[in-house]
Amino acid sequence: MQTKATLRNNRLGVLDIGSNSVRFVIYELFGAHFTPVYNEKLLAGLGRSLKETGRLSELGKTLTFQNLQRFKTIADAQGLGPLLIGATAALRVAEDAPEFIAKVHREIGLDISPISGDEEARLTAMGMLAADKRATGLAADLGGASLEFIHVQNNTVGSGISLKLGPFEIVGSDIAASKNFTNEEIKTKVETELDKIDLSAFKGQALHLIGGAWRNLALIHQARQEYPMRTLQAYRLKSEDAKELALWAYGEGRQEVLSWPRISERRSETLPYSGYLLNMILDRMRPCEVIISTTGLREGLVYDSLDDNLRERDSLMDGCRDLARGNLQAVHFADPLFEFLKEASGHFPKFFDLENENRLRQAACQLAGIGKGLHPDYRASLIFDSVLYAPIAGLTHQERAYLALILFSSYTGKSLPKNSGAVEALLSNEAQSSARTYGAAMRLAIVASGRSPELLSWFRLFIERGKLRLMVDPAKSELLSERVLYRLSKLGALSGLAVSQD
Image 1 (cartoon, rainbow, N blue to C red):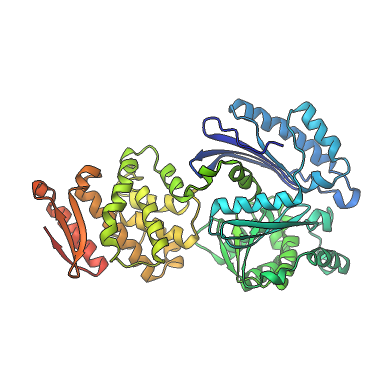
Image 2 (cartoon, rainbow, N blue to C red):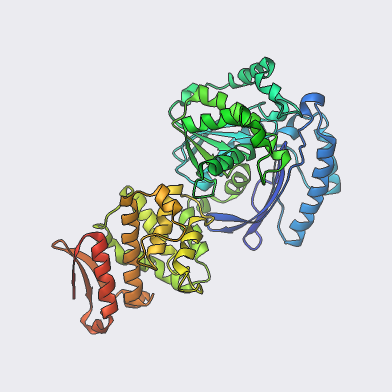
């Protein structure tokens, strides 16, 4: 198995061969930030017949082999180096797995030897940290044949455990039948496996759910709740809401789940069992909240393969720089902009703790100017949507809405974007005021300097005797135009500070 990244043109490819799905993803890297630029999934069901026969599904083997040939051809055409490969439970336990692995190696040239359950758990946790180094709690990754648990805290991965709790392993091929959820034999099997880990030891911590079945349950929950921000990464549910969803998914909502629009039959049939298992985990662990992670093994393979210098970088800042690429003004203006605003912004209203507030403000400055080329009548709202759904790491939904509102306010004095649902649902009036204030300060700096770091250096924005002051070098007094003074007055009104200028 390939375990180290081989970068060509800052791209690398990953194969994730699970018991239910096979996925091929090409990632593009920019510092510590990486994002998929090609993503193809096949629900092959390799482990579908494990319970009945102990062997891989014949159809699953055919589909997997055909698509591995296709993926290898794409990888070669893209000029990728050796692929990172994570093969999991089905290929660990099926009696005919060695034969299939040998055939793939011989005829396609890929080594799909499986990783251990412990290694799968570790890599899954690494993938979660790649999305947000602040992640803390118990990660649970549900696949077709296994469930991996691993604890994460202080950017450190603990020891993990792999349990035979996947739907194909516990139930078999008829995994959506209602009889399964009143079957004492199945319940006993689940309880016997769960007894191998003391979930009560993690009581009150966050439970991070990883895997396609749980992601799709969360997608259904968002739709039923009319949640205004349709992105699953970092989606949070109260523990009681997660339990209600789990009970509904395998109970009275089972038929609705099985026929949910835009979820394939091969995926939807695993959802009732995923709810059944989640309910039992919740009863034993009693977490403070449940958090959905869209990153896992694949991202863990990438993150783990990077050298230490890259992993130590701030992926949020690298992601924002990547999003702003192609705009030289933003590239050269971002850091001077943040430094220029630092002195005065310490007196602006803030919503998060100071360290996180400054982190989000710095991210906003990295994104200054991403509206290049957009129609001015629609620019602010388009930028808001772009930032809200940008593929950047290290953000909760609340932080994402906050950052998007800062950028929106750096272009317009309007209170809310057209797509205001996320702001109204996730940000209090206090949070909205704080975001709009910093956005207005960015707008003042942009207007005053024309996005020129050199011209910005002639100004100083600070607080003196309770007043917001903008001072310019006398040799550049012509820069202090009426338009600049107007922007200063708007900032003063938002920040609650009286205004003075020199």
